Amino acid sequence: MFGPVLRGEKCTLRPPRKEEAETYIGWFKDLDVIRYTLQIGPMSIWQEEDFIKRMAEERNAISWIIEVDGSPVGWTGVGGINWRNGNGESGIVIGEKSVWRRGVATEAIALRTRYCFRELNLHKIRTRAYMENEASKRALMKAGYVQYGVQREEAFRDGRYHDIWCAEVLREDWERAHRG
Image 1 (cartoon, rainbow, N blue to C red):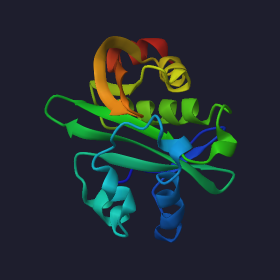
Image 2: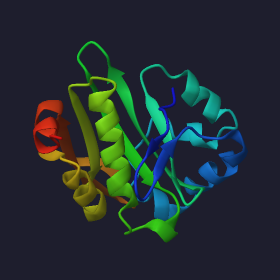
Image 3: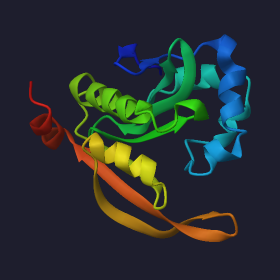
């Protein structure tokens, strides 16, 4: 399903629009964009015309398009939500390279995390990133995620195995850091 519109200073999170589907699909064809992308559900979903419909029907996931200055620049969401246990795994892709290193991912992560804790009443959000993806790790840590482990040689890419950095944030810890 899609999350509601969430506005920040640098970006807005909003539902996807069918007329923008080619833009979204294009992000996942750009090797620079996907080089650090861990599988977000079946990656083939982004190649399908009806992927927006399929995302809307998913009851254990919340998805948003990240918009900057009226244009879509990326995607974020939380999937695999276990409603009984109050947890899920987050992901983010900034597809438009022109907004890299401008704090957009950091703000999108913060907006998404706040929504998950304050509106969905989740207890914990997990995430993973390639160990060498320092930008993602920094953005996640700014939003309160802390490392809980490393999956050694978990992902095979570019002819070799890579370690995956694992992090999480508990609602209690996040609330303590964001009182007010």
